[in-house]
Image (cartoon, rainbow, N blue to C red; front, side, top):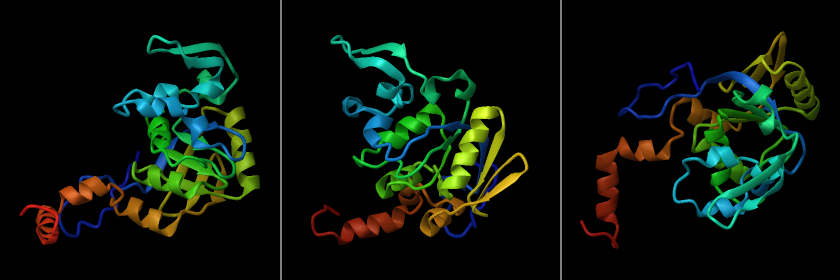
Length: 223
């Protein structure tokens, strides 16, 4: 995901890579207000682990006939022209979307499914706040740019699916071919990604003494 190590080295080591830049080819998914139920249908929230969710990303959008088969599997008939079905984009890692992407349910399964499909960064006009937060917890930047720049990038990706896109979180730019877009990254998200402090579980694990001291101070835990 990142080829840079921007961690400042202060304090105990944190087992999370800094995410200063993301490189990869793109996949355009057009449309405003694409909600988390389109990204991963609600019936997949019953899974015990997130493993394997990637193959079900946009599942009901990718087949005209889709749903449970009554035997624990899924019906997947008559594939649509959804970009996630397009072999030209199968190795893409930069998802390019429009406005209010990830709205609706707060399910963390949505970014989990995208990550396990292969997405390392999402570039769009805007994102639902909780979706962006859930992406951050996985080290996936959600970078915004104006509508015209996004549409131009989507057109370019469709015409040149092998073109590499560079999402520079630290510098807040998105670059492809000879074009560089001025982008925005939420300041708190940018700080967490660049400093390698986006993995809260790793942060807790790197401060066992502080965690133990806090636990001992709580009236409802046994010392």
